[in-house]
Length: 100
Ligand SMILES: [Zn+2]
Ligand SMILES: [Zn+2]
Image (cartoon, rainbow, N blue to C red; front, side, top):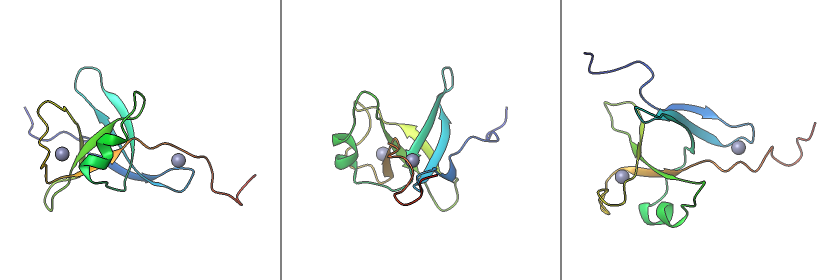
């Protein structure tokens, strides 16, 4: 057993619309391919914006660990969680003025 697997954490990237993103496969059995906004929100705001097709994620991001998205279980996730929280990226398409 290894304590750390390659590709375990979130990778930073940029969407076609120019938004900074975090991408990660979340989950062990049925992994979900998550594309989240890299811009953190206060937990309350992130949770308020959750919709059936838009989830909020807890972003574990410390000095000595790679960024990592974690599913927010509302039953066990603390309201005072010190981590950053992000939302699934909702793409609004390419920025204006850059039409093909
Ligand atoms: Zn959290
Ligand atoms: Zn986008």
